[in-house]
Length: 109
Image 1 (cartoon, rainbow, N blue to C red):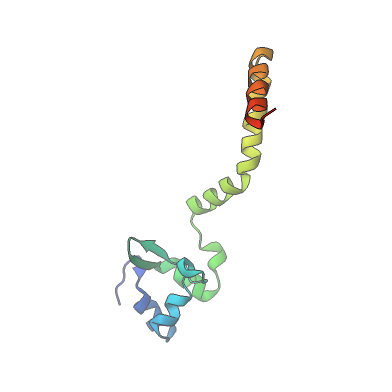
Image 2: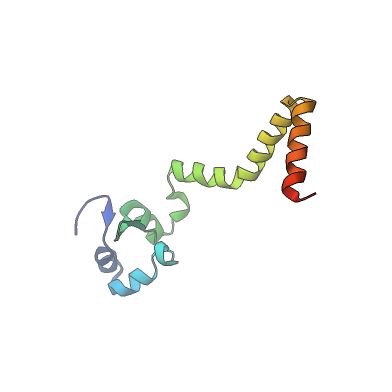
């Protein structure tokens, strides 16, 4: 077994004492719970995330960029609404008339 940043499916299976096919079926890239990434045609398992998953500490195994990405996705609709509201506040009456007209045309009215 290597001491790199990732594990292979075979190495993870060895740690779990199970068959690599069983591990493959449980990988997150295949709908399972074992954290894994697809890199081209290869599947790799981040060692730290795997160990956190194995010890039941996977809730804290996510990196800061992953947490920020999840928050951005969850906050997306609110952010779009805030941007739209800010644009409307700054728009002139003529701008709003053009937008309203374009929306009516698009809606077929």
